Amino acid sequence: MTTKFEEAMGGGHSEESGANPGGRSARSSRGHVVIFLPALNEEHGIGPVMDRIPRAELEAAGYSVSVWVVDGSSTDRTLEVGRARGANVFIQEGRGKGNAMRQAFDHVLRTRDYANGGSSDREFYLMLDADGTYPPEAVPEFVEALASGNDVVHGSRFRGRMEDGAMTPLNAIGNRVLSTLAHLLYRVSVTDVCTGMWGFSAKALRQIRLEATGFDLEADLFGSACLSRARRHELAVDYAARIGPPKLIPLRSGLQIALRLLTRRLNGPYTNGGQAAACTTPKGIEAPSPDRFVIGRRESLPPLQAVQHVGGSWNELDLRRNNHGGSFQGTDWRGQAGHEYRDQTQSGSTNHEDLSVRSG
Image 1 (tube, rainbow, N blue to C red):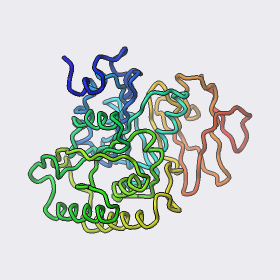
Image 2 (image 1 turned 180 degrees about the vertical axis):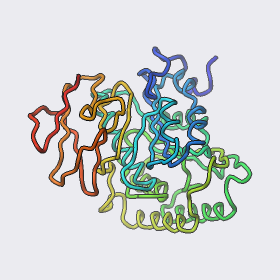
Image 3 (image 1 turned 90 degrees about the vertical axis):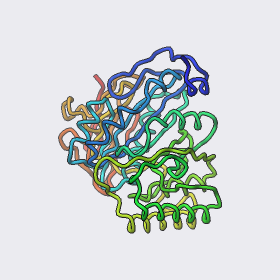
């Protein structure tokens, strides 16, 4: 039986189906879907969210799928639950949802560039919260909207069904006010500027310039998408009560979001601090997917084998340390504020500034 999504995507099954260990299913000619789940102490929510991702439907439509848990240094079992379900893990450096997603976007885009070797496969990137509030079942609809030519797709909780108690009256009023402000500043139609469910084409995600550090991320995404003249589309999404205690502080977060909308509009798409890719090095990365260079932590590998080559054409990867310093500690690459580790695809001898790890 062919689903509505399969018909929209052209129908039929992929030549290879089924998921590989590490959260990535077999490569398919129709493209690849990357799902980001930002999380901070979401041990109770992240499992159900991952279980509800309709991988079989996406794969039947010809898409391969990978899932990344973007972790803000959780102290509970969030990472354990994510790993058990085969997710790739990205551990941010610093604090804040905005910082986490800027770093994760940068890392995944760059590593997929290396792994793809110039592949023409389409790639779609989605983000939704790991607390159970947004419906993973809507992922195929977002992919369909992106595949049909939209650059950015964002969900609207106010156009979908909202579960009783999912949003307080104060938050509802605040969201309406902020969406009205966004409409006035950017002269576009939007009903939910604070939505936590987004989709991007690879090209759009590379062009979006971000500065946000915290819960102003969505405002930054929206403003940057508008100013870069991306083709946007808003989809109705259902909204459920979150699993676990809330982390957002309404008044403070609302002011932060309003300020981000205003400063982004005044400064334009290319602000002084804005960047399409964050340079801050994450605390650790675990990516068991078979087509990536991995910079960061792999608990099953010796400390110096931080880069594992498991496919593709690269034979050697240099991890070059810049003049600001930095340190290699245990099984993690760790950076300090202002420190940067650059991945180079060139050979060379190892010295005090270079660490060259040869693939086995």
